[in-house]
Amino acid sequence: MVKDFIKKWIVAIRAPFFTASAIPVLVGTALAWNLTGKFSFYKFILTFVGVPLFNAGTNLANDYYDHRTGNDEINTNLTPFSGGSRVIQNGLVPPKHMLIGSFLFFGLGSIIGFYLNAVTPGNLILFLGIFGFLSGFLYTFTPILIGYRGWGEFLVGLNLGTLAIIGAYYVQAHTLSWAVFWVSLPIGFLVAAILYINQFPDYEADKAVNKRHWVVRLGKKNAVYGYYFLISATYLVIAGSVIFKVVTPFALASFSTLPLAVGAIKILKLNYDKIAELIPAQAKTVQMHLLVGLLLSLGFVVGRIV
Image 1 (cartoon, rainbow, N blue to C red):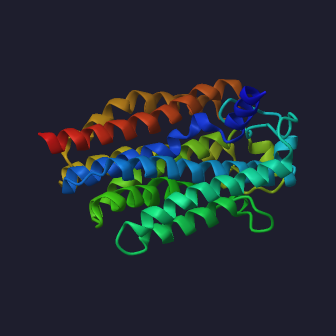
Image 2: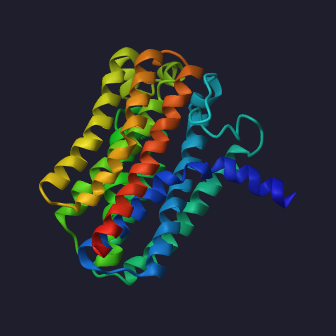
Image 3: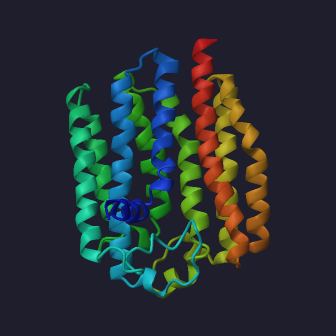
């Protein structure tokens, strides 16, 4: 019984996709060590746990309010990467428990956040945490519905790109650098690309409930160019950061993921209006985010050692 309980909540919080919140912590921490030589293992672990806790709270709130709007109920174009966790629709977790769980995970993440803020100069971590909670919970909260008004892609990229990396960096270095901002952009673009490509299968259901993200606003055919932009911008910013000596040349190791990018773009171009055929592009986008983040982190570590 305990095993079944744990399994269904792992599905509910979408734990396999926590790479989206773990990667920016790795990148921010590695960059802090690269630029300042500072590294606190226990602060890293706390940050590495705290950010995904906020991610879990957001996912649960998202599913609860998408259930309230009827969005997930009418969505029949399901993939392993989109369409919600389905635990409400499959009768595994009552809607009320999802909302309670959301507050529980946000609460646990906040305890870590308050502690990190207390042992770090200033209140930057506090402000980042407050913004993360509000934007995460209000993403699908009725009647605010941030994700229904075309701001979802921007906020996801901001929270799990720029702000998470800034927070992870600041916890270690106790200072900021413009390098942190530039390094955060590729991770932000890629996590936004994950959300963006996952909206193609959800298009019909989202349009029916007036969830007007940019794939709905542009239409599937034109929205393909938005994905091209996010992927292209990722590699251009990394290249520019190296060219202008903002970061170590070892960051270019991330360019080894270009075949994944090209593959995802080709698949989306040919299958933007299909479901099963689009799944490999969704998978490649998740892999791109994971590998670019890991290779950037590794590049920063090697750059410091060398």
